Length: 354
Length: 125
Image 1 (cartoon, rainbow over the protein chains, first blue to last red):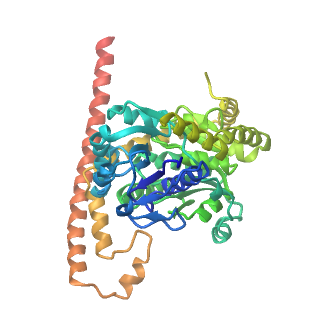
Image 2: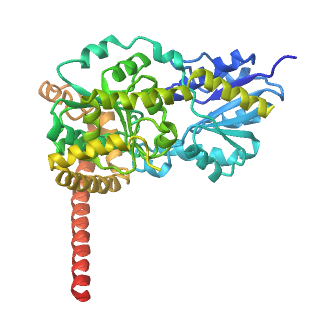
Image 3: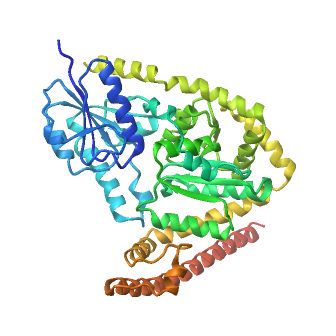
């Protein structure tokens, strides 16, 4: 008997590298499991991302499954939910609208409409998938009852590529010790806390510490401006605004970094996963999904004690034994997120659903 | 149950204590963090984002960008850009006044809290 299709929809694959990357990884899993699997997108496909079909060409039967990846509002969402297939909502954390106050109104509107969509289409969803218990809470709050927690699926192939040589040449060497922050530059990410960590590193430990910020600030210019004023008031010089990065650039930034720092209050955990996969120490505050993603691995703080976090970063970078201890824990944790484990989880989930 | 990284953090804590600068630094960052949050509240009305948008529309340079060259060579400015710049200047003046008043208001509130706390201490004796 022909297996049912497991297709996926995401409004804008260009908007989120993390979502586009997971969509691709999942498509490969579903195809390996023998399910026909296509990706439908509201807007043109992301460069290097999965090939996307026009939603108008989607003609499913009632047994087919459509994974609807949800993080921003979409004009096409009504059409998506009007199709015959079984709809599964895959929740990628929606940035709370209150944290976007004063930024580009379009950002706030997208967040509000995403939240409204969650409520409005609740009854049309067969089941929902969250990547963490933290993400699942939002679904529970919006009335979802059948929620499965399946960790974010890394697109493992991306991490074995070659790092961007230009980035390596530009930033490596000259005695720099880099700390990396990865993700959209938004107030909920609490970048200011990382600036305090950098200030302590520079003033007290070594002026060669540098903070590299990888991620877009589009729509959040006022927040970036506020950060720049803070940087000026602390006379910090070693902050690199790298902007959005390609996969190869991201690999290069990880390669030249002593640690990934995540002091976000709403951490999705994707950057931590990537750090563990790329063997870079992951240091996080326990906000959002960080504790669930790290498990027993990485370094986890329950308070934002900036000088202590800075001392920990410096300790890991300077003491080989300490660094190896941290990395050993992370390597063991990475197995939990490996492609075979991800495939096993999704296979079991599909069996249960059927 | 504590996280396994507690051991690493403990070692870092010892280093922090040995340097003896932790408390002063933490106090400095607490103050800066407080000011940053106050600025965030002020910016939550959208004036700063609006100004930055206007600057962008008017083709104004980013802070630390190539503004000097542009000004020096008097690059051609369209009437729309000129209007946007004039409006941005007016808004920036309004913002500066509001920000000063906001800061003054905050200072007054902090003083008031401090006074109330002193009064409670005196009354408690």
